[in-house]
Image 1: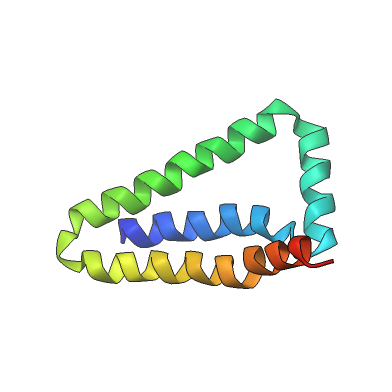
Image 2: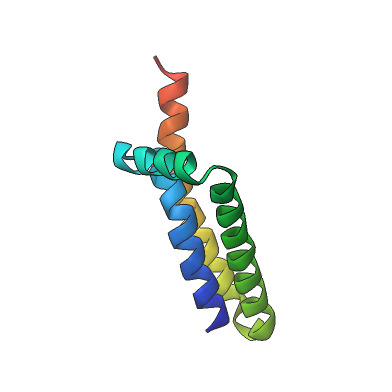
Length: 96
């Protein structure tokens, strides 16, 4: 349960930040949050980073017998992000 809570926070926190590369609405929303809250936005995002990293890590440690499942879930999420978001960005940057 701890892992899944951490994973959910990760998806929501990082998903919002990643989506700024995909859709202009997310980019505008992020910019408006940064303009409105300034350095507090960075603190809030960093705090959520610590929460999800702690939740995921603690969840794996508590339920170490399922570490392969958790590693697969994390690898799948970040692989999909890499292939669907960052690889197209890289290709777009390299190819004119």
